Length: 311
Image (cartoon, rainbow, N blue to C red; front, side, top):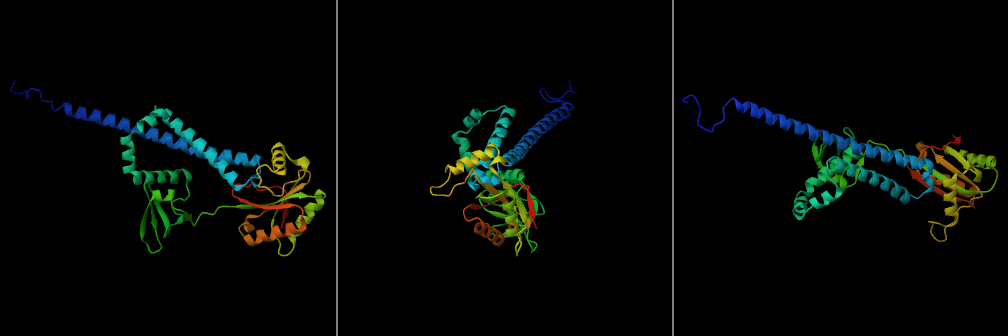
């Protein structure tokens, strides 16, 4: 009895075993949380790329220069929002929750905590924005507010810049949700398409006339594609029909004639950024076809058209 410890004390030999079990349980929980976070990340990345794929699939079927920029933005945002909502719903289901459970969890006390941590949550959301949208990467040169420099680190809450005078600037990621910023290293390819709608004449004659217009000094490089009524698909015919009857158009606006030829002139990317070149091309086409509708459209989603090259 003398060799035994006090009554109720824990033998020393049991302590290492208990600590080992606790560490093992903690490790298992850490692996489970990591797997859940990895699944959520992959799910939202898949949703992002599926949204981009669906958007481009739609604009391959419907010429993007046939719709207004507002309509393009509405369709793209609707697709992205729908897929992100689906991904979020799948995340809740994977974690064993639901929208009803989530709404119930947001009690008054929870809302108070959210307001208290508003800045932190905004920074974390801004970090998620950088992960999924990737407006810039490490090594890019960006400008936000009065700060300009090279991105050296992108964290969950902050982004680190190094300026030209070797100063380190820490920017909260929450600014990306409310402040405009510029990526000075990333070039966005924007295509310019000029549409000439309602041209009388023969296909070959019109094609050669447009080529001659763009080829005069100074020459304008681009692609020419003509469409006759027999070439148009069902979607194109519906768009032309809607436009010709004034559907979705302001009162008094000139409408398309579905029985005439349409021309699509896509300027090459080397000249698409020049507004002077665009204005010159539009002026030439309006002078040559005074009774036609000449409109211009710029977008990064416009695919290169097939047709005659004008050098």
